[in-house]
Each structure stands twice: as C-alpha cells, then as structure tokens.
Image (cartoon, rainbow, N blue to C red; front, side, top):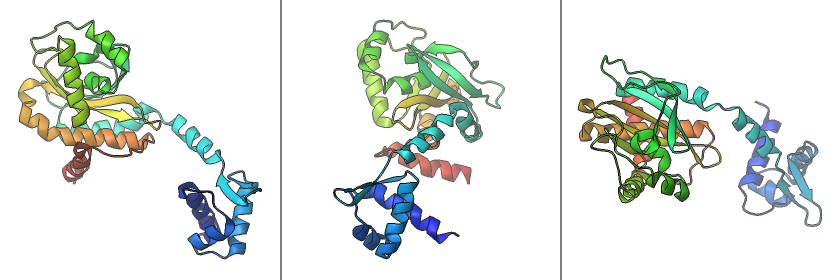
Length: 267
C-alpha cells in the first residue's frame, strides 16, 4: 500500500469533514503527521487542484474538483442498469412481479419489470402507463410530489374499481400515511384483484426519482402478507438509492428494519 497516497486521502477527508478552515499545524496534529509532512501533502494537493490555500489566513480548504468528479460518476449511473440486480433479487425474495416506475405528469411509466415465476401474476408491460394515484409505485412517487401536482390529480380522480381513491381528502390522507410508513400500497385500486406494494427511490440530489414495487393477485397480497413484505421492499429501494449516490440524513424505522429483513431473507 502506498502510504503517501493514503495520507493524501486522509488530508482530503479531514478537510472535507472539519467544520472550519484548517491550518497546517492543526491538520498535522489531527492526523498525527509532522508539520513538514502535512505541508508537503497540502502543496501537492494544491498543485493538483484539489485544495486551495487562503493566503491571508494561512488556512486550507477543498476546491470543487472532488464534487466535479463525483458528479461525473453520478451522471454515468443509469437507473435501469443500477436497479436490475435488485429487481431480480426482490423477485426471488417475494415470488412476485417487480416493477421499476417513474412519474410522468399524472401517470407512472413502467421502465422495467421482472416477471413472477407464478403462472398467475400481475400483467403489465415495459413502457406501459397507469394513473399514479391507483398503483403502488405511483403512490410512492406522489407521496413526495409537489402540492401543485397533487392538486391537479385531485381534480382528475375517477373510479376504476370499488377500491379506487376518489376524493381529494382520501388521496391526501393516504399519501401522508404512506410518507410516514416509507412505502405505498395498492389494494386493487387500478385493476380489481391486483394488489401491490412499493417504495420510493432517491437520487444523489436528495430527490425521489423512481419507485420499485411488487404486485400480484389479491389472494397473495393479504394485509398480513403486505406487512411482512414491506421491510424488504423498502430495503431494496434504499439500496438502489445508495447506489445512485443518495445519503439520507435520517432513516425511517421501516427502512432500518428492512435492512435486517433483507439480510435475513438473503442469507
């Protein structure tokens, strides 16, 4: 291992995490380096464009070069490419059809899917659309949508089955509940007899960019089954989010529990 290179990385990490601008003496003390060693590392990083020296104060700070590199990496991450292995795993764990969806206007579009091995399963097609307020992935996305979009959808509510949400209050209450739980449920609201559960996926910018969910016939999606499946769905969404660069400030209890559930199920 190149110890000089490692020390350089430690300097970068220290500058990134220290709450205030840092001088040579303080940095050397923090990292257990000699002042001459710390100064030499800082000068190398300055020459490479990763650090700048604020000459008036003698302090050092990071430039935006690391951010530029990170943004380039994030920009190459393709949602479908990242999500596919997690979709396949979720299908294996649940035995149900898995969907990856994004929001477009008031509808969801199915970007990708992995079919259930069961002969009786949810029917859908990649590129297909559904009213966002009627399906689990759509409701997971709407839980974090703008108030103006929710207002727009509230004016377009219409029943597709006896279970469809048809009033603005029902929709808003449902979305608030889902936001607290960390996942959304479809109780046969789009197609009678087809249910689902989904969780939002977050990107590196801290925004919900997609949703992943499972769906199938209602006789396999009883309330107890949905409750048992929820932590696994949330955990898979959380892992995809992490691969996309999302770093949450705090996690819901459901998401935290989901990590343990997924690990136990995969073991």
